[in-house]
Amino acid sequence: MDMIQWLLTNVSAANQVVMQIDQLMLATSQSSTKLIPILEQSQLTLNLMESQAKTRSLMFAYALVAFFTKRPQLLAAFFMTVLLFEWSLFDNYSEAQLYLIEFVIYSYVMTCNVFNIKTKLACGIMCLLCLVFAYDAAFYGVNGFYGTYETGIYNNIERLVICCHTIIILSVVDFRRIINAVKSFRCYVSHISRNSATFTIL
Image (cartoon, rainbow, N blue to C red):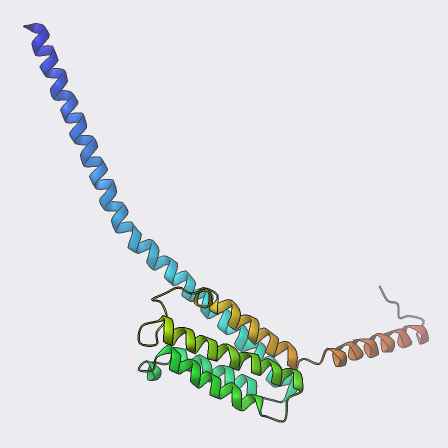
């Protein structure tokens, strides 16, 4: 009789332990289910902040180019394309339509006679990219919006855009003029150092 009571006591204790484990597992699964949307939201926030930082960097680079070259067309074009995708006024337009508008903007910039052939070719590359993005959004998205099918273009769109803007910015910079200015400054400093007894170069 004592053996039976002992067995019953152990069985009931084991059942209680199993029930506690089940409750713990259920609570863990519920908490992880609640945690997933929070993690996804945090990732989206980080991606948005990173994208805004890249946009500010490009805007600063275009502003420098406009200041030193006295040609604000590229800065204006970049600013207008940022407005296309950020301003709520254009929310009724699909992404395909926005890329076509961007194509028109850079097509106009490409025809400006103030830029050299390298900058015009870089703007031509941007126009080609806009057409590819518009096609991809129109035929692989829903109602002209990205996100339905993650194509290779969709997954690399940010890298392609940043690369193209970098090419445009570098095409405007006159590296030969910069090198000649550095050489002239170096020759000037060397001339002063030779003609001055107290001037030494570290």
